[in-house]
Image 1 (tube, rainbow, N blue to C red):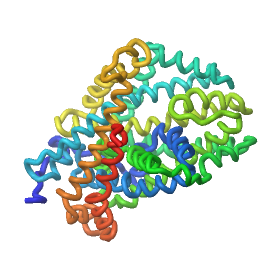
Image 2 (cartoon, rainbow, N blue to C red; image 1 turned 135 degrees about the vertical axis):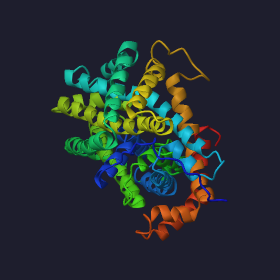
Image 3 (cartoon, rainbow, N blue to C red; image 1 turned 180 degrees about the horizontal axis):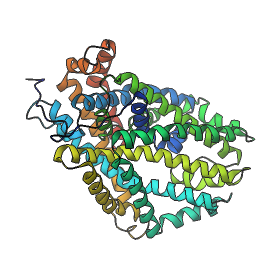
Image 4 (cartoon, rainbow, N blue to C red; image 1 turned 90 degrees about the vertical axis):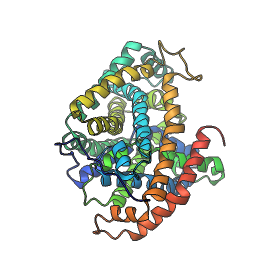
Length: 462
C-alpha cells in the first residue's frame, strides 16, 4: 500500500520528548539555524557581485521555488513523526522501503559540516578576543592578513579555539531543547538584530557610504545570466539549512498548533532581512575607506578589521562586529550538533547527556583534521583536497543536494498529497488547501529538477 507506514516510538520508552515552548521560541531557534556566517559576508557579497537588486529578484524567486518547499517539507515531516531525522523517515515511509537513508545521510552531512564549520567559528571567537586586545587594530591589510595567517597556521591555537567552541555548543545542548536551544536563541536573535542595526547606523554615516549601498541595491541586469540564476538557486538552497536533517529535527520540537508554512515564510523573510542588514553594515564602510569587497575569509578576517580600524571608535565597532559574527555562528552550530545528538538519544535509547558528550568527543577528533588543515596537515590531501576542503565539497556538492532531492521525491511521490494536507492543517484546524496544492506541484515536478541543476553546477558538470 502506498501510504501504509510503520509506527515507531518517538523516544526511548519512558521518556517524554522535549519541545519548544512558545511560538517565538520556534521562530528564534529555526531562524538561528538558518542564519550563519554566510549571512554576514557571503550573501551580501554574492548579491552585489551578481547584479545587486536584480540578483535579489532572482534569489527571491529561487527561494520560493527551491528553498522554501524543502524547508516546509522537512519541518512538516519532523513535526508529524515527533522524532529524529532517521526515525522520522522510518516511521512515515511504507514498510520495508529504505527512505530512512535520507535521514542518515543528513546526519552525516550535519556532522561533517560541523567538523569544518567549528573551525571557522573558532577563528571568529578568537577574533573577538583579538579585537578586544587591539591585536588587529590596523588599517593596513598586510598587518591584518599576517594576523589571520598566524592564527590559522598555529596548530595549538586552532585546536584550542575549536575545542572551546565545541564545549560552548555542547554545554547549551546539555540543557535540553527548551532550556538550552530555545532559551539561548531567544536571546541571541534579538541581540543579532540590535548589533546589526548599531553597526549599520554607524556605517551609513561614513563619507562615501552611498557607493556601498549602490553595490548592493542598484540593479545591473546585464549581469543576470544563466550562471547567475544557478548561483541564486544554489544560495536559496544552502542558506536555509536544509538537506542536512536540521529542519526535520527542529520540526520534531514544533508545537502541534504551529502554522508550519507561515512560520517558515517568516523565517525566510527574517533571514533575508538579516542578510540585507549585514550588507548595509559592511559595504558602505568597505567602500568608504577605499577597499574592494572580497568573499570568504579575506573579507571577514582581513578587510573588515582594516576597515573598522580606520574609522572613529573603530575599536568598539570591530569588537561588536565579531561578537555579531559569533552570535550568528552559534545558532547555526546548535542546530547542526542537535541532529546527531537527537538521533543517538532517540534511536539508541541513551541519555541526551551521553549522546552530546559522545558527539563532542568524536567531533573533537574528526574536526581536528580541519583545524590542522592549514598547519601540520596542510600537505595531507585526499582527492587533491585538504580535510577542510574535502568535507566542505562532499556536503555542499553531494550530500545536501541529494538530501533535498530525495525529500522532494519522498513527500510528493511516496507520502502523497493527502498526508501533506492532513499534516499542514493541524488536524483540520487550518485551511491550507491552496498552499498544499502549490507545494505538492513544486515538490513533484519543479524543485527536485532545480536542485539537480544546482548539484550538477557544484560538481562542475554544467
